[in-house]
Image (cartoon, rainbow, N blue to C red; front, side, top):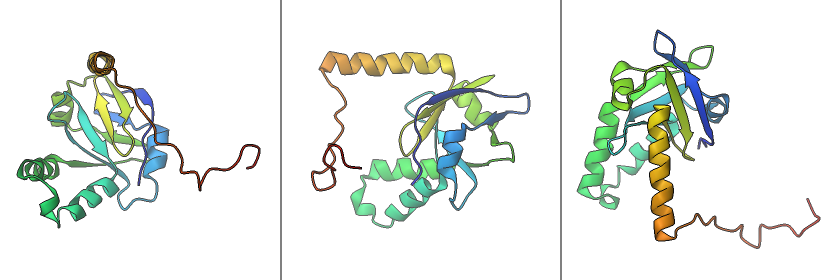
Length: 161
């Protein structure tokens, strides 16, 4: 499965093309579709995106609808209905459809934000406020990210490689 890390700002040209970060493109290599899948984020002023593998996995999981609430199923169906497959050109760019750009208020620059198995595309100025809200909420609740430790059976003693 693709893995998307870090943040990168890229320019949007007059034709609506934007270069997908090289590290993101590398994560998409070998998938059944050479591009990204993008759809409006309904709780944020951003575009949610992923590789086709993520959408294929979501599609397969819908064969067991009992694992989802009716609301989750409706959101999944909406994501499929509004999703756009954006093919990468030879220069690693995609054409950002106007409805998606309008949803996220993207004009001349896009901030790509890695979220692990997915990523988001933001108007850079709008993401800064979202980021500050996340940090403020975490600080107010005393929450920090805890990464799970590597299981002892898989850990190598110090000095060995």
